[in-house]
Length: 413
Image (cartoon, rainbow, N blue to C red; front, side):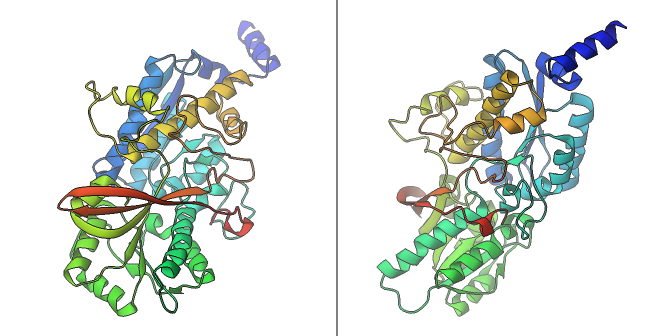
């Protein structure tokens, strides 16, 4: 009888039994790749997420509600990611998840929608931005998927838009030639058609995609294909050792287009490993570790000391993006706590509660974001940088900021 009265009281206050349990503590699962195909870059993002979760856990949790989490290296294997998701749901009453790869994130769309578990992925696939499925090009609606940053499609569109102007400034004759270069895999494929369509719209000649393995190798044959096609701007859909191998291979056969790298292929580590490259363009969604006069870097450096007590370790912008992802989740949880309890459904509503939103303490670090119930493209502004490396010395320069229109035909695509 007492249990029935308690349950009735919870219903009267608008809290479900699950929400009441969540108020005692909240559990967040964290999928990461530090040893698999994307571990070259994944380890940096993973460190940012882990350090941020650890810092929040040690500094008051979610407005006093303890935060628990577990980080699992699933080595970029979709079945292992799904198995961990199911385990966390059944054993830990997982209320939200910090994810990683495109293949597993897209495979989990239906699971997380059914279970009402917000997932903050490190996949920026455009497929994850349509919560209602109103765009016929959308693979399936993704109401519980969020990510911090522009989608792969929008980042590529922004770079192509920059490239169209760059071609004019250089006095290029005729149509510039654009090629998508990447593995036949959900991650490099995510923006392939969308970006090619926009490139065509902007007046590019678009070649057939050039397939390059996600694993490193000798890619001279692919480079010669680019040379034969006359590629002026080549989109790098892979990351890490694969991209390093491609750029080096092309250098040996005299193929030197302007590289348009996706966000995971554009960073100090990749440029340093390539060793000798110019004309390397990539998108950026946060400030850099070395930027001065950025208020939010004070909090970033405190978080960094969770795994580096010296405070001296250099952090990539991938690390910083991981922090942004966690802090948007944290503030959505805080909103949920004040508005009916920390449930997945309430966390989702918390993502819609603000516009031009930057998490407290991260001013100047995270870009302002706005999510709505009809549009999960949180950010449609892209900072475009160029990088060069000579003898291992890396120089990065900002080129332009591109703000894209929120076209309906681009939602979820």
